[in-house]
Amino acid sequence: MIVRNFLSWAQTANAAQRAEGAGALARAYLYSDLQTSERRAAEIALMSLLDDPSPLVRRALSDNFASAVDAPHALVSALASDQSDVATPVLSRSPLLTEAELIDCAAIGDPFAQSAIALRARVPAGVCAALAEIGAREAAISLAVNPGADLQEFSMRRMIERFGEDGEMREALLSRPWLPATVRNDLVNATAAALSAFVIDAGWLTNERAERLSREERDKANVIIVSETAEQDGRHGVRELVVHLRASRQLTASLVLRALLSGNRDLFEAALVELSGLREDKVAGLLRDFRGAGFAALYHRAGLPEKFLPAFRAALEAQREYGDVHGGEARLSLVMIERVLTACEEMNGGELDRLMALLRRFEMEAALEEARSEAARLTAEAQAPSVASPASHVVIDTAPIIDMAAFEAELMQVAA
Image 1 (cartoon, rainbow, N blue to C red):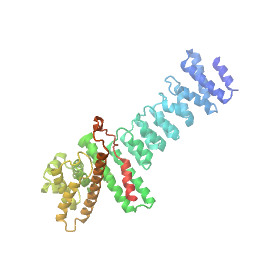
Image 2 (cartoon, rainbow, N blue to C red):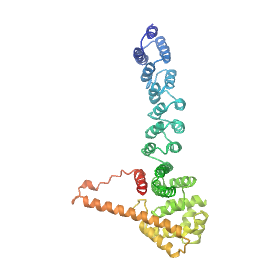
Image 3 (cartoon, helix red, strand yellow):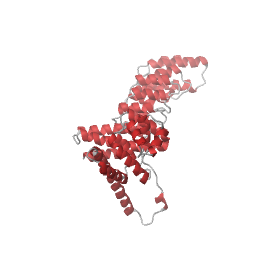
Image 4 (cartoon, rainbow, N blue to C red):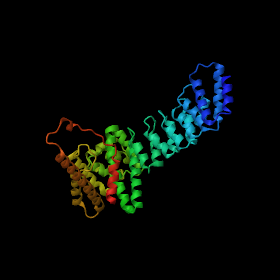
């Protein structure tokens, strides 16, 4: 009888009154001790309100049933398929919606509805994959910043493919606590491409200069990624990254040489394994005698440039002599570069001019980095108090996985 009276009253009430009444009926359904017949009648009345022309009424239902575990499933499903301002409460919170329903709602929803799904407390991998494939930019960013999203590597890479030129999208992914090495590499490439396009369109750099600078900055970032991957995931992680670099045509001789001259041997070994097809132990054995014919045969089998062989041998010799000159920091070593330059100059009859030009660029970069580091150290010493407090010895590492800001600043500095 109460429900019949409610429906009769709803015929003449205005939208605001109907919305208030819909909320009251929803709360009565959820929290009152209704008889079975009354509960069924209330459910019918609630379902009939789905046809109400005012979104205020349907939004009142959505707000009240959004988190309910004992709401009518059909009612929640209907609300989830309504216009976005009605659907977002249930899309963002309802425990009744299945993974298949969420994927379906993502497919037909606008950016607001998709973002509501992306920001759920827990987003299954299948829903993440669907949003990565068809979601709007706003939904992809929401998904990236949500720690409850089971965002798999292939989904993140698809998001970069679709929205990599968007800085906010890249920042959102970088904010995640753990990123696979391949995703970090894709982010570097997307950043470099976006910045290169910007400086070229602005007329600050020629296409050729922007491309070379972009390539060198990508290589620099990739050496950092390899170093961190080796620490976190060991040789297996480095091998997976090298496979990705090869597939994306980034596994170049200049990248491998840069890694060696930065004190990182892991990339060189993994590259030789990947390019030659030999076992890791076989490659490691041939590398131990890098002056011998066996190493030369391995090098040629890997398809690396023949003219670069003297530089690689000199780099391996310098690495054996100097070891880790930067204490684990992945940047070029000036002393190692100078050693390689000397060795190559002694045998250069003109055929190594291209290699020498590359080494000179490495030398310039390393010298500049050392000058900056020394200037920063001297400035810090000059500004430091004469008596250091105990707290001054505490070092807090807050550096990001990849310093994208420094990456951008260097590119812009060259363009200035």
